[in-house]
Image (cartoon, rainbow, N blue to C red; front, side, top):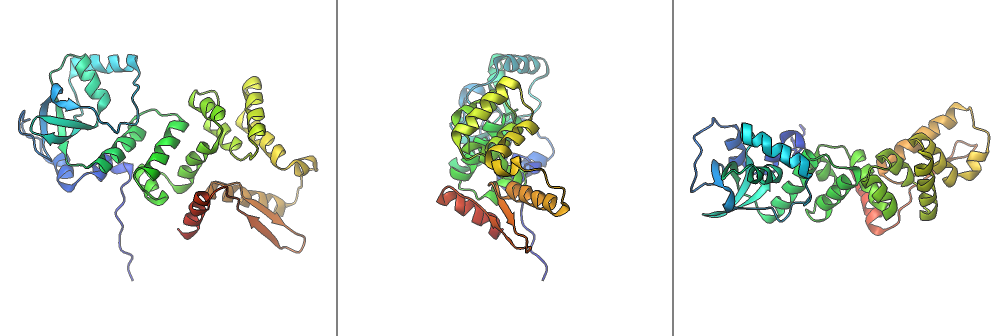
Amino acid sequence: MAKKPTKRNALGRGLGALLDDSGNEAATAPKKPLRERGASAGSISEIPLDQIEVNPFQPRTDFDQKALEELSESIRVQGIIQPITLRKLNNNSYQLISGERRFQASKLAGLKKVPAYIRTADDQQMLEMAIIENIQRQDLNAMEVALSYQRLLTECDLKQEQLGERVGKDRTTVNNYLRLLKLPPDIQAAVRDGKISMGHARALVNVEDTAVQLDILKRTLAEELSVRKVEALVKQANFPDEVEKKPSNKEEDREILKVQERLTSHFGARIRVATKDNNKGEIKIPFDSVSELNRILEIIDA
């Protein structure tokens, strides 16, 4: 039996994937003269700035002032190349769905009206589109991406598979970001401030003891350790007995280690693969909460 095709809402299709069909048609239809009043869903119109209110679901409230001024100067010279996107509240009131930087820069440039796509969206769609546009358009650090993913899961009631489709990422990548939220605040702040990379953070998340995590962080910052060196410290902290032993040259041991690393990346949890001399063994998948267990079971069932 032929498999029924599924509709994917990945970022490759842009935010239009989250909007109604009429909106998508409007985005690809031949350009028509812009209208100033009585804008309807699916149209592109010139909307007065004083009739537009900001998106209450906008994930980011701080914008780089210098970058905003540069965009404002570009708009003053070239105009707005890409229209902003609004939803209509009533005849003389609109709400931003996406394009707040262009909206704010247009006000700085002294514009009175801006070109805008008019779309139909409820509050749930507004939140989802605002978060996804944030991920897609802004230069976010790893913690901001992780928090955005978490909001999509909780506030938009998406499953991880749906989340991956929305943001155009595979499950492993999504899991790697979400796992960063398990880190203590000091390490999250170090990622946010660019003091350590996501690679450092991904290594540290595999340490269960918070005190050990913070000790490794402190040493990483003081000695400017590479990701590889941090990974070695994490391995030493987790498996001190194994680290003290002479490294094995057996091909099967190296293969088991590769399998363990692949499983850890796939499940977003520190997987332990133990083997015995009789070619038997076990795979241990740790979890620290019911929600974490459900997340792992969801991956297994996929």
